[in-house]
Image (cartoon, rainbow, N blue to C red; front, side):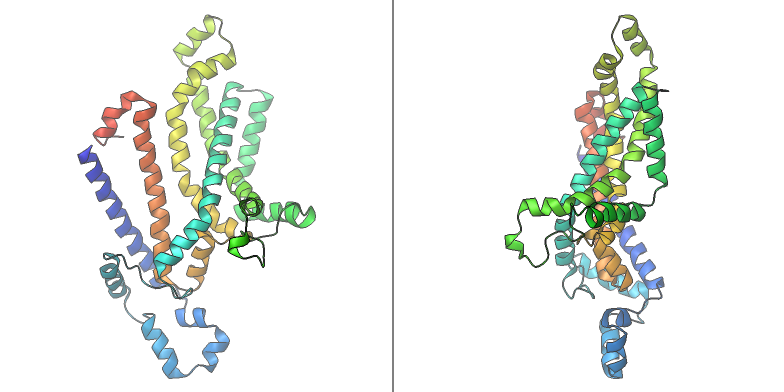
Length: 329
């Protein structure tokens, strides 16, 4: 286990270095001028040349990307990720604040998509070739081909604009102080973004779970159980779910990246203040320190999601404990 922990720590550090370097390189290749993007066209025209030079020097305009990255990395080792150009605050503070805003949205969407996708996949696989199976597959294919932002707009127009059942956007009511916002108000604003984000993640989990269910139900021990007179759903409950646990766990933990990626578009449509909206703001403003901080935060979430799956294998299947301890999972 010590060897496994050291190996995972080394992989995590290598991932952080690679993500930060690639993000810095992409920002450096961007044609966006941070001075113009963060001050505005009108303010830039009325600004003196000396002031523009001061801002350009402060924000590292014209400095080679590798030099900026080395300076940033030297501070990052000590826990200083720099200061956000757009929010004028430390990157760690902005990322922590936006992560707290997205935590409930990401967690609820992740759980709903996992539970719904697994349930639909098991039902479709158990009723292979039937009407329910064809309906589930058709729905999953449609969801896979539907752009996330388009689905978010349709949901917003129907349930918020036309029916008026839910607020148009934001995570809290407008004009209400944070201390006065109740948990029920937050849930009311969370429903549409969480619904959209969870629905888009169902298709992949459901289709993969269906294929695995078909394979399990075609195995010899399931046929033997059927010859003993056990019904279809009894076989699924007693034999199928146990053998579907590991694939379902793998799909559920690997879907963290899809949920985080989809949140960028969903949060933009619903004006939900979270990691996704902050990422778009940082990208459009050429805010390299904030963009790198957000990339590191999301990469860490995906890494620990996959690590959690590896560790949970030993709890679900005792035969996997030795493999996990040796780092072969």
